[in-house]
Image 1 (cartoon, rainbow, N blue to C red):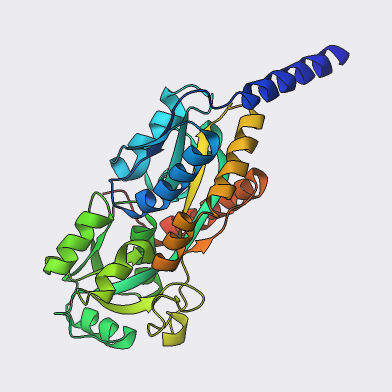
Image 2: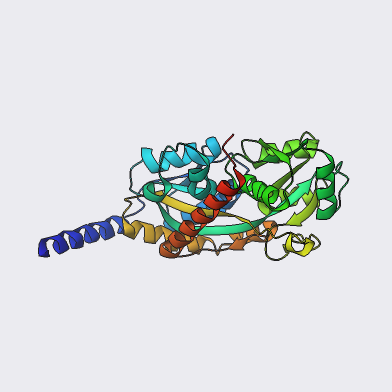
Length: 319
């Protein structure tokens, strides 16, 4: 037993020494979504803050595809557990995809370790202006009249946008068909063009389009109205029990020394106090939810349970 304690103490001491020198070279920040999407918008001010604070470049590397699975697998399986390749992603590859996909290239609960939550945002249900609905009741009536011919876009199978849409279908018993895209940007482009009539998206991505009048907001999925959209009522205010958020967090490969995890946590939370990050919060109606690795881990586990139930109840699958 004493030998085990001594070995554990030695490992902890080695990890602490390693962390003291960390980083001594550039760090790659994998964002498993296209540039310009919500995850990318959340990641960039944090990466800039880490660069400024820690003296080495934290370089964003966008690796989109398979609803975040491709980029996430790079961190989970292909890189060393040394803190020099980290992941900033939305919730999808971590707590939704494991229930949605029959096979996964990694086990998020075992292969990745949470560092900190970064922010969370409500979603907005919005329609192309050609849709003759100004509120949720009118939209639901319009969808019913389409007889199953109504489509909705999402930023990809397994995203919070997709699963929130499926939750909407389950709660309202409406018949709408999923049209997945490879990210928010292309999905929004097609909804604005009228190729698909409606979609849920996070306030990070959709607020600029709403303010420009390119889309019409119908309802917000948060518990309260978004400060960026004070005139848009929540689902609850319009008589539908639906609450959902997209959240974005930082992860490392399992096995990364705990002192490095703790150092990244402290520095990331410090970066979240920067003017650049606060500007993102303000412009997108997001909430800063930086937390300890331990608390973030508990949150991730609870989210996995929640979305597994939504997947099961809705019968949703990865298209």
